[in-house]
Amino acid sequence: SQQGEEDPQALSIQEGENATMNCSYKTSINNLQWYRQNSGRGLVHLILIRSNEREKHSGRLRVTLDTSKKSSSLLITASRAADTASYFCATPGASRLTFGEGTQLTVNP
Amino acid sequence: EAQVTQNPRYLITVTGKKLTVTCSQNMNHEYMSWYRQDPGLGLRQIYYSMNVEVTDKGDVPEGYKVSRKEKRNFPLILESPSPNQTSLYFCASSSVTGYSNQPQHFGDGTRLSIL
Image (cartoon, rainbow over all chains, first blue to last red; front, side, top):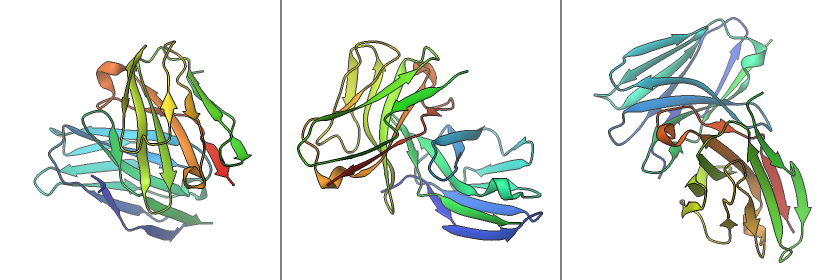
């Protein structure tokens, strides 16, 4: 089974609104990463948060990590139509990153 | 520009006809990996390589082969493709010391259809 599971599976919002996606994972980690995938394209790394960090910002992105609850959230503020994509959390394993199934975000103009 | 390049981007072929999907990276990364992405199953690792001549199986290696003769290239070989290998394939790379704590760089994907 997947290490990370995103919630919700799909999210539709209006431009300018904030979008929040959640990720839960099962085992202890030393970091968690978020990626974006535009339709038909490869994954693009957004942000990495280490286990000793609780919150991290990058532009309009804000990521939180709660290791006690084994969960992370990705907040996109002031969303734009160009933010429409799938968003994945990824956790490190023995030889690879393990990805969740993603949240499909649609930002309507 | 730092990039991972996959070819072809799209391929429709028939069962049993051997094919190779190439992957090349220009970042001098030691670690390279192949994933397949299927609806409802997410991304699953097929094979990975920690360095030249070092490869190992991922979660779903059956029906695939890889080689790592050069640092920059990591081709995925389907010796006898079958319809259940119809999927979207991604190659990724990162530094070997950081495959788990550094960003992975992905190619744009190869959409394979096996008829």
